[in-house]
Amino acid sequence: MPRANSKKGIAQLPAFDEASGAVNAVVEAVKGTRNKFKFHPDRELFIHDSVLPAGAVYPFDFGFVPSTQADDGDPVDVLVLLDEPAFVGAVVPVRLIGAITAKQRERNGVTERNDRLVGVAMASVLYRDVKALDDLPTPLIEQIEHFWISYNEVEGKEFTPIARVGPRAAMNLVRRAM
Image (cartoon, rainbow, N blue to C red):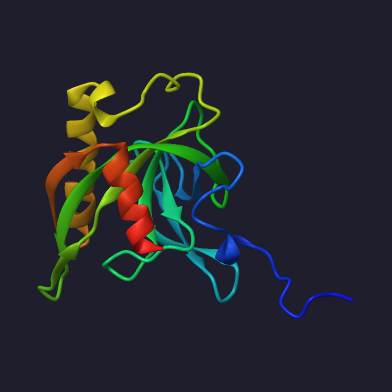
């Protein structure tokens, strides 16, 4: 006899993969593209949400950690370093290497935290030796921060990086948001 609520899907996916200890990242925007899709848990669908301006693309796959809620009410954001772009809806187990903590001023003037986790795909070959943000070239981190600043500026928001933190602090951000 089936269980009353045996539904399994992205909306029920845990933040952590029990077997590996990795953080589950769900891709909403693919590296090198301008499109962002947003997951709608009530419908279990990814619906087209926005398009970056001409000339701008996502620098890496971008998505969220399921079963979390950040200060802005959305799931925790995560940028995924992966050898090749994934696809919208892909679940990528990642090892967190840090986070860019930030505050974001919305169009209505309200300011709240909107941190960006950074993780390496567990199956990555190119980034397998990257254990912390400090292992990445400084110009790359600066370019990622600049991407988030300009991304928000186009939407009439202001994104201000506060600090770069390591893997332990990034894991704590996930745990706090669960």
